[in-house]
Amino acid sequence: MGVRAEDVMDLVIRSRRAVLPGGEGPAAVAVRDGRIVGLHAYDAPLAAEQVDLGDIALLPGLVDTHVHVNEPGRTHWEGFASATRAAAAGGVTTIVDMPLNSLPPTVNVDALAEKRRAAAGQCLVDVGFWGGAIPGNLKDLRPLHEAGVRGFKCFLSPSGVEEFPPLTPDELRAAMVEIASFDGLLVVHAEDPALLGDPAGPGYPEFLDSRPGESERRAVERVAALAGETGVRAHILHVSSALCLQPLARAREEGVRITAETCPHYLTLMAEEIPEGATQFKCCPPIRSSANRDELWRGLADGVLSCVVSDHSPSTPDLKVPDFAAAWGGISSLQLGLTAVWTEASRRGHTLEEVVRWMAGSPAALAGLHGKGVIAVGADADLVAFDAEAAHTVDVSSLHHKNPVTPYHGRTLTGVVRTTWLRGRAVDPAVGPATNPAAGGPLGNLL
Image (cartoon, rainbow, N blue to C red; front, side):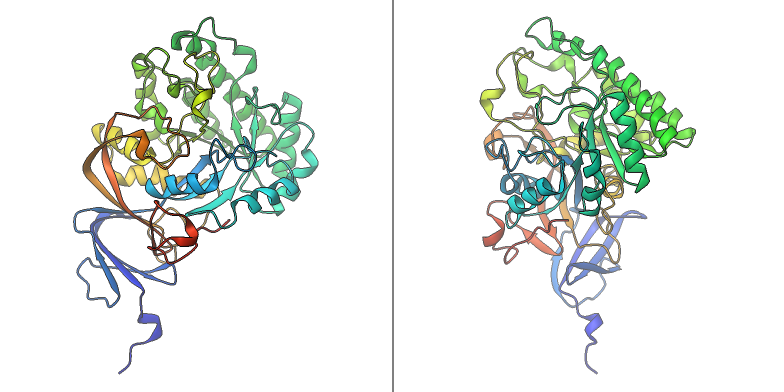
């Protein structure tokens, strides 16, 4: 009797630590035509190319919904080729690109088309796009939505680049009404500009004082109130202050459609340990105290914060001058997010299953990326072999980010990504998509 076509598989990956929707355990994951077609017992006899990871964990590919790729226009800061190599090396199989700091910003359909042209043929992982909501582009929001952006980013305070100005309160309300009319998603950089100031000096304490946690809390309260009035889906980006947790929880209890994320640097770094002049640690909103960090972890455990994403915002080294008042604000961590978060999460008693939910499942759901962020029949075979007990010391020169700047340099982290598969094909981050020998050719799709 012949083998039925539906029984033929391209690849079987076995692991005693597969992180599945029902928990962590032994499994054999069967792949055909880029999708997961079966979940079987670890030792099930299955005919296909075999990869046996043993005790190395098998995770779904991570989904990072907060990445500044910067191409076109500022490709010397980062670009699609380098960013997606870093993503693949870090176990991230899908990124969603922010609408700034590229030139032009993604605030109309023509700019989106230009960004797609820039990305075409360069990507080792799948790439989606956010649109932008800025003063004067209200009429562009629906066409951008229809062209496929995952939602719209806005600022309530200055963004740091002139071509992407913040929304006034009236403009914010108008954008919410428009986006709610087609059930889109608004993602918000939430700091109240009235509470922000210029640092009183070049040091980190002065910079931290210039962006108090109260500015985040007040902005979150404003967004939550307007989201409740307009019915829009709203998401708060990069929560750094634990003062945001209570208003977020209260809004959700009242039925407001609002979610929030935090970032690896807020969960793993702390203000007390930032050296003088070490502006690789500068970001907006800022890294806060150890006690605040503990509260953010509680916010994750309680579900008030649902996603952990990188806010990878790189620049060239010359912009990181040793003056916190003058340096560019942004953390480069796309390649390191999983290991940084797992290092701290495991120390605090959290599980790989929780980390996968925060860094894969919830971000995929936020951006409407169906079939991503989960090991399940029918999902894309985006998978990661993660050696959860292995340690490594970060050497910035070995990272795939375009510029060698990161606050994690010299830190010893727990967990090593051994292999990343995109739709069942292994990715080699050391080479570009067109010549990738492990994958046999171009990989990443533009979503």
